[in-house]
Image (cartoon, rainbow, N blue to C red; front, side, top):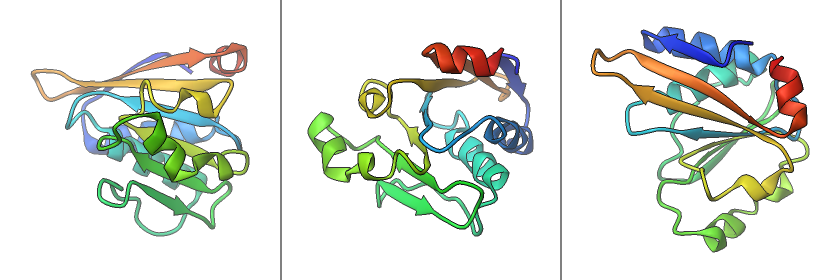
Length: 148
């Protein structure tokens, strides 16, 4: 899979998420980084669709974490925007589900990397022309190999 992607529409971002889901396995941690409006939730919606989870995937901003079951692999969707630090991450008890699910964390950079030995960072951005970009940053040999 290419490491750099142009995502001109929300639909393109969701399609990219579905493609990314094909690479995902139970126990994977995906950390989404980028400013407001960069497409983090749209990408997670695509990942959810690619994993076959039923129902809508919406931002967990107010509940902090949602678990979506019923697909090929459960999806744990976390919004770490309001978390103050590692103690708040520990309070979510995410390590209870990380082995069986794909865990996608918005705003998690610098907070959740200890949940898995290897993880994938997706750096999202929004250009002045409103086109989003995604850059895949593998952390660990397993992700390097999967991305080719």
